[in-house]
Image: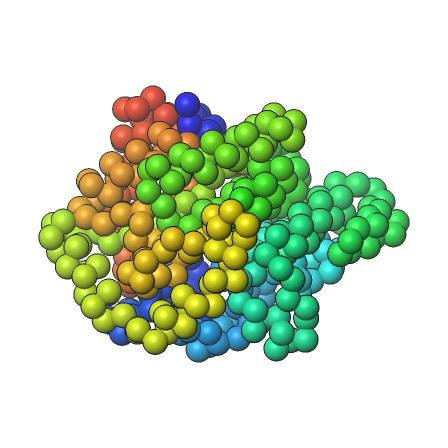
Length: 376
Ligand SMILES: Cc1cc2nc3c(=O)[nH]c(=O)nc-3n(C[C@H](O)[C@H](O)[C@H](O)COP(=O)(O)O)c2cc1C
């Protein structure tokens, strides 16, 4: 039985707020990281049926992405330029005091009529921390810090007076006013959390509203879902977190054309940048005791899309891609996080050609969507 069977599958897209697009390749990418491009994209996306947009947090250039817009300010700009889109701001706990971020998010929530969310990312790029003079914790310690951070956010948002005497953060009778907006089913801004290691799933299963996975095949997704459900049940949660899956989407008129685009992306890979990334990400899940985690078994080809997006195989005709998406939905995936080569035109085409097919297949499969609760 999939998670939350009466809810429609949701769609999110990666906000290209860093330069270079979503693939580390010299292939033409008609995608731009500018504010103007992104505002137009966000408006296209909300009309195309995308419920969420996910920003990326990166403080400095690394293996492509020579330029980066800061994620929280960029998220707010997109929220103010749209009507319905929910924007998920990516943050590194190591760079924030949780009470300050809780305050920032509460204000953004009021300014956007309850549309802000947060993605807690624990960090993989050591240089980003050391260049800012911050300590670089060992992998599982980074996740322990993220867990404390999430607990702090929730405490500040939901309690009159928040107190915490943690290993990483402290709060003393901290009273946040105004609280963020809340209504039934949404007690505070949604907390997403990305990662593929055991530590990431422990945090996701225990604490997050949403768990985000890198691209993965059916077996990999099923194993992660089973793990998350077990952790959530052990923690006494009534329901597991919702599950979001990354996938790089290539929809063309024929499967052969779509495959040819993938071949060209890989043939034109920026080899030194991909190899540099490959060695930097050894700081991630591969460095843990069980060696499970993001990029632990990624090949060179996988890493050309730096979140393993090709592994999800959303590549082919609109019908093939819709069928594969619904197959993931049946396993328990609640959201597809999509990346594209040419964002504006492909997001628009995805809304026109793929989303309606997904809705039809969902309804045939008895996963009939119910209307979303309206925003207040
Ligand atoms: C959907 C998704 C989005 C992510 N976004 C970012 C990001 O914007 N910035 C960042 O530094 N790391 C990001 N990460 C990386 C994770 O926070 C984490 O560092 C990575 O998964 C490695 O840890 P792991 O081995 O525990 O999976 C993201 C991960 C996922 C799955």
